[in-house]
Image (tube, rainbow, N blue to C red; front, top):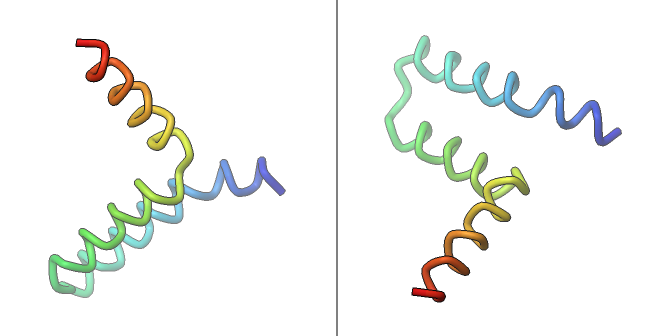
Length: 58
């Protein structure tokens, strides 16, 4: 299940972006897709934690 989610997550998000572009949707929907990527993908969370940790060391 995890592998399927990992392999389908970004292609699905790219597909949503393309669908929004083809349908000439409002730009806020693209921002919502980007926010969903940043919230749902755990890699971005761990990268943000590392950045905050480095920032606090300064």
